[in-house]
Image 1 (cartoon, chains in turn purple, yellow):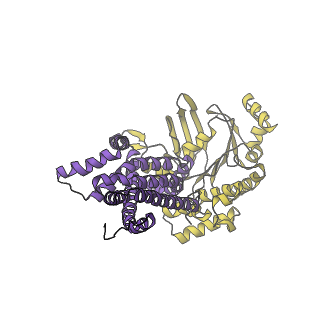
Image 2 (cartoon, rainbow over the protein chains, first blue to last red):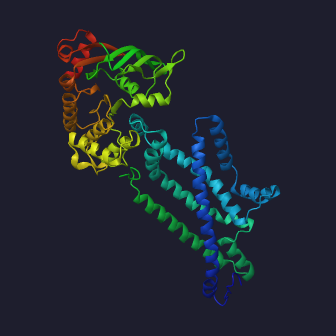
Image 3 (cartoon, helix red, strand yellow):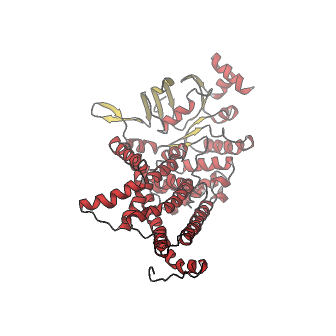
Amino acid sequence: MLFGFEWDLSSPATYAASILPILLIGMWVTIQATVIGFAVALALGLIWAVLKAAPFRVISWPASLMTEFIRDTPLLVQLFFLYYVLPEYGIVLPAFMTGTLALGIQYSAYTSEVYRAGIEAVAKDQHEAARALNLSASRTFTHIVVPQAVPRIVPAMGNYLVSIMKDVPVLSVVTVLEMLNVAKIVGDRTFNYLVPLSMVGGLYLVMTLVASAGVRLLDGWLPKQGIPLK
Amino acid sequence: MNDPIIKFDKVIKRFGDLTVLDELDFEVGRGEKVSIIGPSGSGKSTVLRILMTLEGIEGGVVTVNGEPLWHEQGPDGLKPASEAHLRKMRAQLGMVFQQFNLFPHMTVLRNITEAPVKVLGLSKAEARERAEELLELVGLADQAQKYPHQLSGGQQQRVGIARALAMRPNVLLFDEPTSALDPELVGEVLTVIGRLAEEHDLTMLLVTHEMRFAREISDRVCFFDQGQIREEGAPEELFTDPKEDRTREFLKAVLD
């Protein structure tokens, strides 16, 4: 029994049917970790991108160094660090929070590069036109650059969404009950790993296909020339 | 020339080792229509880009309406201009770009009203009214709600002209406004520019390869070569009886 659901081992089919609700509870945790981790990656990545583009080296260099460091160390190392080291300094976060934060921080280093590329891809002549019209730098960024950069960054960001989703099982090492961890516990108790692990594979496939389709839909819906302003 | 609106005084512009403007002296009078012709790389467009503050200068002084453009008065003479000074000076100038440079994600109307609302502080209704008058002027009254990619190149450039005019500049700079257009679309843009030249006291500075057009609308034509004005004069004079060999060679090459 797990989460109040009993398993029925009389046949593989009944076994699968009986543990599906258990796995779906784990899947819900996976989805939450993905969404929150992705949101952190998007927000923090934008902050990195802005800092790295700063005209002052005292700001841009540390930001570049940090993102490089984050990118070049394994997610698991960062996760362990947050989970085991921070409590020594009195910062105790729940396992789920620690895990999603680690995911978000790791991926923020990647999304910052996507932002940078998207912003730089907006042609120089757009900046010149804005300057000739005396638009302020901030107005140019928010109303000329960003609307044109967004359609360019959506496909790459979509790839990272799927990647984050596939990295959520790493959180199981800090006891987060995401889908793979749940399936493993079910296997441990029933001595049947084949069915739950196969089901995790299948459910992952469904999730990533749905996420990719969503990104493609958004990509197709956004006009290539930018988010329209009437 | 007394009281020129634009004055270049020994202006030097370099890109790396390349000297694009070599102590250029150049003046434009109030309301004057001046065309700049010359071979590629002669520094023609650079003159406009310096005036629009898209390129800085390495030496000399540029004056617009009696005030230095790239400098401002400091306690001990001229010092490099601050962004605030550039913003103030820029308001007197408008530019029409070779590649139109319209904002692709904005409707024609929004392209024209964005800066008047955000920079000049016009109300949306006022800006809209001004934009509609200008669209009428360039013959695109019925295209206000379209996006640039739904228009032909000639139509896009006419929107570009309307967008620049909406800021009510004293000086309008045209940087090869028809060079990116298919030949059959050049006429409609030239017609609009020609009408502007005839009906408005706007000062116009036009870099162009359209010799016949330059001859028709200009009060004065300047032949640029190697960062200097080689020859200038009334269009009739310069086109029919050029004094310099270099001018003659250039005109022969482009007119034949």
